[in-house]
Image (cartoon, rainbow over all chains, first blue to last red; front, side, top):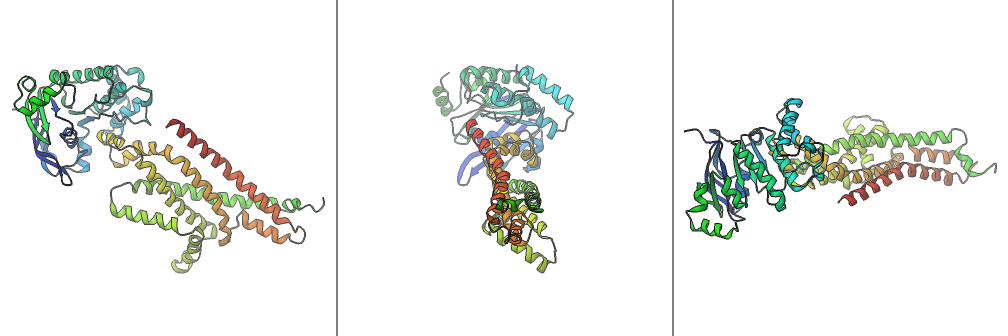
Length: 245
Length: 227
């Protein structure tokens, strides 16, 4: 059996006395799409942020590509080139043009040749339909455009694993589709992805596996279709019923 | 009109001496500002790092230069350095040193304030593409903080220029010191020389500081419009 891309083992996280994540065990196979569902406040964002070192955790272990992760700023800085992350609020750098936003990582972190990195950036921009905006500044773009650029910025590092933290949650409905389309294409290209979303129809369509989180515990980790048609726990059933889709 | 007081300005070398004094004031200000601002940016960035010891030391540094009056600082460095540390600097060098350290302290607070007002999300977005600490400051945080710190920095510049008028106390031949010498030397011939000399000094300082303060006001307005 192939080594999973990421294994999370007995991860525990608390802020002071408040226990956020309890004994998280999670396996993510290469080329699979995992959708992380759960009510707000269940710890989805905290979990996804633990996976690229934006949050530390008290105990437990991450194993990436068979290598245990020994958390330190240096290790995370290296690993983040392989684990891309896209945020709800896009967070493009307002002081840089679209192209410079995308090239910052490839040029300054990975020290790649400018011509090669630029060619790749422009190719990625074309794929998301925004090639003509390479010299624009983020303030000139709509939310949906910014989010697609933010995805390109993460992809430009050639990551092996992508984290999406509610990337459509602050978008107008008509902007959501374009961003989901980008995610769908990535899934078809067999990018390994972990997606936190409230777009249930999209989740159902794209998920190879669903992880259902509540109060910081994983209640279910099941294949995608099974979760939607035949959830194992009552909590998941209630959650599905409460979502309007 | 043969004895009109205004002629004191143009008698002999008076006018060029005053301009020479103004140049000394400007030179000390410029050197102190360049060194102080560069050092202040570094110290300000360090003050946002999560190291309690470093932060405390830099905080103490800031408070020392902010609390102790500039005159006292000048005296401390002017008299104590040669006597207790055997470092003999001329008065101008002492002035540049004290002013640079003072500017660095004030600047560190301006830079720190601007840096912590850059949204936390920007920092995380930078980390997420693999930037290390210095790169994060260089490419993401500082460029965004610059706009926020420019008005306060220009105000600091005008304060430094004005404060050079204290330098006569450690015998720097600045514009005020030279003005006083001219007044003394011409007391017989131009009894109201003080009016004209100080009037000219007023105008010279105004010419140096007003453009800066107008520039700061414009930038501040532009920022308010953008916000």
